[in-house]
Length: 220
Image 1 (cartoon, rainbow, N blue to C red):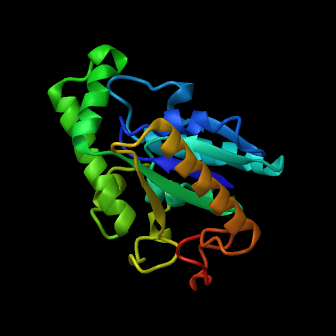
Image 2 (image 1 turned 135 degrees about the vertical axis):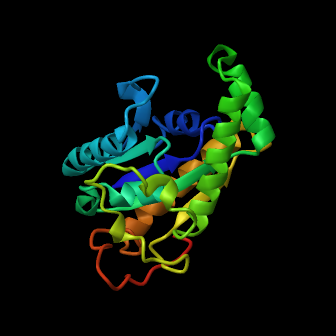
C-alpha cells in the first residue's frame, strides 16, 4: 500500500519518514523530490507526473509484498486522481503540519536561509490550503485541478463530501513537540493503517472507486 506523508515545506515530513526507516518491517521509505526538482521555474504538470511515477513505484513494491512510505507535497486529492491509483491495494494519507511561526523559523534555518519573505509566505499559504483540503474535498479544489495534467482523473472524488469515509487525512501537528514524540505518532499511524488494511477496515482499499463506500472505522 501507499502511505503518504503530505503537507507544506517546513513541517518535518521527510525527517519523520526517514526516522522510521529502520523501525518498520516491510516498509520502504522515499522522499518525493529525491529524483530531483527541475527549474526554477518548475515545469507545468511536474508534480502530477511525479505523483503518478511514485504511485507506479508503490505498485512495484506492492508486487514484492512491501509498503511505500512517501513524504512529499502531493495531497490526498492529487494521489487519488493519479491515473494508476486504483491499482494500489491501499492508500492512506497523513498531513504533517506545524504552526506558521515554527514553519518560518525552520525555513529560515534551512537550506542556508535561502527562502525570502515571499517564498515563506507562499509556504504558509500552501499549508493553510492543505488544512482545508484535508477537512473537505470541496475546499478550493481549483488550486490543484486548474491547469493540471489532462491524464489526472479528478472526477473520482470531486463529487464527494467531507462525510464520505474515503476522504480521510490524518493530522499530526508537530508544533512544540520533540522529534521523538512526532516520530512515535507517525509510527503509530502507519501501524494502524497497515492493520486496518489487513483487517478489511481501510476505506481506501482496492475498490474505493466504487459508487458505494465500504463501511469502515473513521479512526482507522
